[in-house]
Image 1 (cartoon, rainbow, N blue to C red):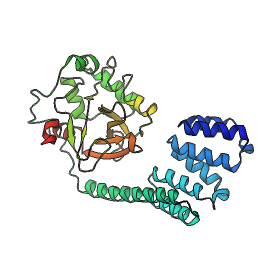
Image 2 (image 1 turned 30 degrees about the vertical axis):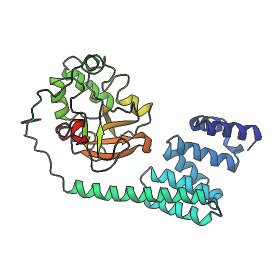
Image 3 (image 1 turned 90 degrees about the vertical axis):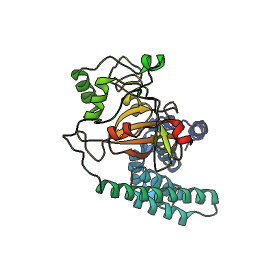
Length: 314
């Protein structure tokens, strides 16, 4: 690597601008890439959450990286985030075999291996839960028996930023066409009665600790379908914004924002039901590398499960 390029890359890395490192390296003809430059490129792709491209480039230069522990570390870390747990483990164990004297790197690898084990256990647990899941009765009316009296906190802020005009069928269709997913019927039922807003009860218990708390998640509001509102599904801080600008995984629809100001979100998760099925509700924590945590089987169950923060403080 030329000295001026090396200096620039190190400076950008110190400042955390890995996306700029990617851009810088991509401007250099690939035929002029040195092995250190390839290593920086792979590392920067990983730190920019471009895991698929990181794996692709890693495999392209596998012959050069076979005896480099850092190559195996970066390759394994990218595989982890693509849910290839067994392959990630093999790469990281190979890295440990190649390391000579770098205890800090060994410690990092051990932490990642523990993370992989946690992910594997979580995946197995979720598979068992889905296997025992009872399908929702299609003839049952949404929110049957649920009392919405005093459900909403219609503060001036909520009315300004969240609550929209009563939605039309055309608006629902526009959202579904734009986002590429069928909205749950329970969500549409609720929005027809109150188009987005801030509920009085803003917490939901969880069994698995998240980036927000050990035993619950918290929401700031529920996004409606009025595009004039800042916090709506197609609003300027809506679902596509969180996926495209904040790099949240494209697994469905960002439905609720959280008090962390964008660092965690609540999503409708369509990975297992398909784009027209009944999505689960999950929490995604950016601070934990976009870790996905199950909350509820569906949107209605999520709403029914909301509790006041004082309940959790008892």
